[in-house]
Amino acid sequence: MPTRLVACPDRALSDAAGRPDEGGWIAGPPPSEGWTSSGRFAAAVIAALVIVSAVVAFVLVPRDGPPAVGADRPGEVDAVIVGSAPLSWDPQAAGDAASAGTLAQVFEGLTAFDAQSQVQPALARQWSVEDEGRRLVFELRPGITFSDGSPITAEDVVASWLRLIDPQRPSPLASLLSDVIGADQYRLGAGSASEVGLRADGDRLTIEFRRPASYFVAVTASPSLAVMPAAQADQRPGGELPADMVVSGAYLPVQQTATAIRLEANERYWAGPPALGVIELLTDLEGQSPVALFEAERVDHVGVGSLDASWLRYDPDLGPQLRNVDALSVDYYGFDSTAAPFDDRQVR
Image 1: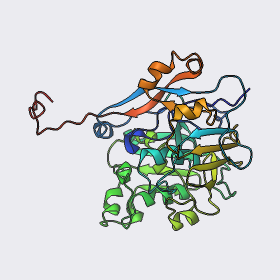
Image 2: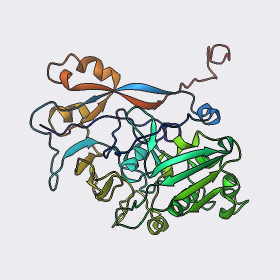
Image 3: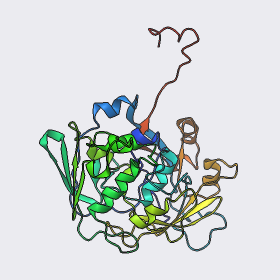
Image 4: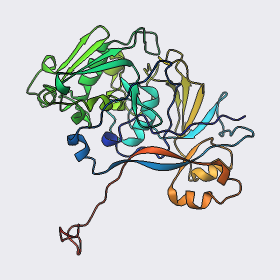
């Protein structure tokens, strides 16, 4: 039986990074212990999104038969997926949806979204909301490590998050930490890092907020708040894959070409090695459509738009392979407010 990928919402906050690819994929098996869900986004965050909803996305997955194979791939590959090359391999520097979808497989945060778009524990095994939402305390899983075997501590989390608001090079998504005490002041050069409300004590991370912010549990699922090792953070990786990359997520990128990225399972991933050992992300389709590549058995899984799905469902071969899944989405409408009738506020 061929490998089948389950299409799930990307482990990325669509409010911050834009709209993830339809039918994003989640790497890695679920943890064996129970999961607890968290609260909703704060109104201040939602207001910036215009519309946030779970939408139906369509994907094509192979039915029983020979597994699809990509072209000219070195070594054995378990699955081929249409993906995107990140603009930066630095999770704190990237701010676009395409980068987030890939970085979410490489770097892990304290929490992650499950297939039902609920926030679940990831690097953190549990958390508590204190002082009426003005304080969050996360407890990291014991014994978790980066892909090179070095321990992941709460200090690594603080160091990674401070990079998001580095006054010398702030992230495009620095506002994710705006409710943390002292974060905006540090970003603007009016305060110090020690004044930011982030405190590490072994495997415990305490976050102090200037106002109730229980919604922040969900924000920690963003790839922008993923954890990376300090030594690699100092290198400030860009769009080219760094040599000897060290990751905290389910997959380790080992090769990047002009058309594809090769991901290999992180044997030290906190939830255990993913079931798919090697994945190839096709980042350049060379002018071909994703559906054409799927028909040619060059990819195992593609997202398709609703217009394509409207006719694919009637195709005798592709129809049985079409699935619909929920996906996180941010949608907005733009109007030319200088032209009638949209120059009338009541019409808009």
